Image 1 (tube, helix red, strand yellow):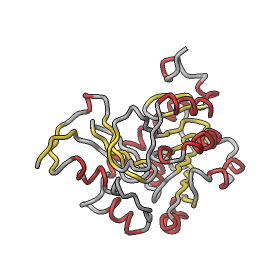
Image 2 (image 1 turned 90 degrees about the vertical axis):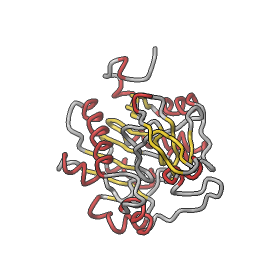
Image 3 (image 1 turned 60 degrees about the vertical axis):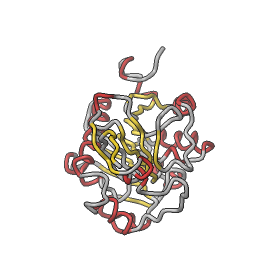
Image 4 (image 1 turned 90 degrees about the horizontal axis):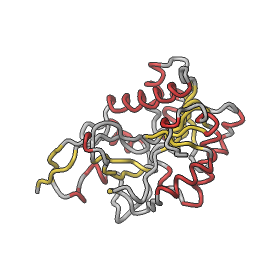
Length: 272
């Protein structure tokens, strides 16, 4: 059976989608979910064989009805990052994401980005792309995959860790000034609710420029591996982001409140 869906772009695991697509697959906390964008301007019709429940890109990581622990080993990265048959992002898509977030941070800082903290970095694919345009930039990737850290840690600046235990890495002691760009993409939605506030506070502590924090809410149409995902209303997340000292700037970008003071009223999502 053929069904018509909307074209989407996507990237695996803890990297986020960017680009055309009203049905864009989102990867949250190492799991894959799909969110239907509201903008019709990004729509493009494609035919996909099978039912929505069998859409490979919307559930390639897990069966939503039978979630199981995932091992982020070499086989996993070979399949979802390098296999032409199974990979769900291209180098061009990654470059667009890198360019977007880097440019936004530099717009706010009014200078080149010098430091990046990437929480949930995978194999650190961002690092060489960032280095290509900012050779002197310092990149630190935090990643729970022992395989990825062992293979790419020294070359790409990865270290073993998780967003929940970010404070244990002592990054605030070694980088008290924070990082110009902090990335935490596709992770926060799968944290227990009681951990969200503390994690956001840690991310804010490490952010001196912009943070890219992807979060989906109860109001979003989400498909895929959502068995353990319990999205909250937008106001719930908004209150905790605000309490942590983040000001929304749109497109999952957030500025620390002290930095946001210098932004124009309509550059942020706050309303007086």
